[in-house]
Length: 256
Length: 272
Image 1 (spheres, each protein chain N blue to C red):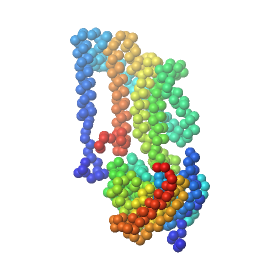
Image 2: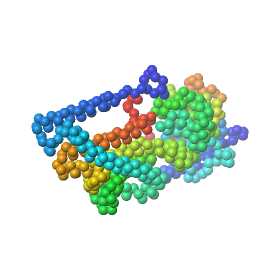
Image 3: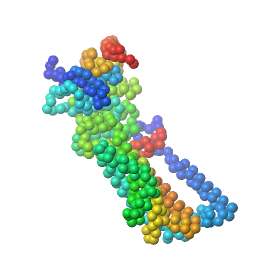
């Protein structure tokens, strides 16, 4: 394991019990390596979103520890929620500016960075539009721009494309891969879609239906170009089959 | 729709013609029918005055009625102003602390459910009539603004709260950039209700107070005209009160529309 692949953040023996007594996670071990696109794949209710929120610091674990490689300088974290979660009264520019505004950056100082983030997601022409004037895909692009504007070391994405139609989703997946190549950000992506996980990631962790334990790990060659060819190819279907089996195994005897 | 780029503002189809003309026709028709019934039936003015006579009375008695209108309006707006200020302050305090909410909400509700007409005579024991009227109007306007603003402040999208947590927003930033704008639609709902109730509170308290002389409001003019069997003047004062209520409502609705039209569904037409 070379230096670049040293765990960027590692979760050890993580348990999470919510205030209402529901145990979301039990003894979960996993690590995120720098520069990878890691997918957490699991059935609904397996706690994969909880893992993401723990990494983001939005929740504290009941037991276990989360360790960042460099504990003294916590890297910036960007988060993309299931819904675009934009401020409905603010235009696209103001929405993307929000994280910097909360950090005390003046509007003038932030403007080039906001414009750059909008450029990255292809929303430059819509900086003055309100969220209600945007399509579902464009709202999600705005949410991604907002997550990127702080130049985070890790981008956490919680089923961001689940509510989009297939054509839009494919386009956004391709754009995300291009973005990732350009920014070299580490991405942790949560999804319940086998195809999405194989297409996007360099590594897939399949989580068990109850307690979120990692039941399988699948590596996807990062060098293979992600395109239509890949999506229709042999390698893709083999990986999908494997991930699909692992997912079925993860469901166990669960009643659906 | 198809020829326009997304993100561009579309000119909205004006609906003001339909919205104004139809009610105006109904109102005009009603007034004409009223006038006709009074004339054909030769109903005496002390039973039912015709609209034309009420209009004449408005002009004839303007030196009595309009100063009273000013008195009632002043009290209504003072009450609404203080009610808005206090309700916002309390709603913000309650939003910060569940303890405060538990401690204070029962009293706010008791004040709300006790009919103002029953409180007014008691207030008159302790306060000068003018002050009592102001306090009454304040009390009825206060609660709807408080409850609606509180609701608005509390019902912020949880994912947005997570977002503000993620970027470690201070309580002040959370309030200024998230809770306050999110609460604006409900605040305006409360303000519209409170505006109407402030007028009702002022009128009811005036009726109970029976304040005469210089500081007499429109409600006193109605009572006074009733004693004198001056029915046309009763109607004229009533018309002024109704008109005032409508204008207060319209002004607050316009304010709400101007503040929310860019983004909130309530201020938009379907299909926009």
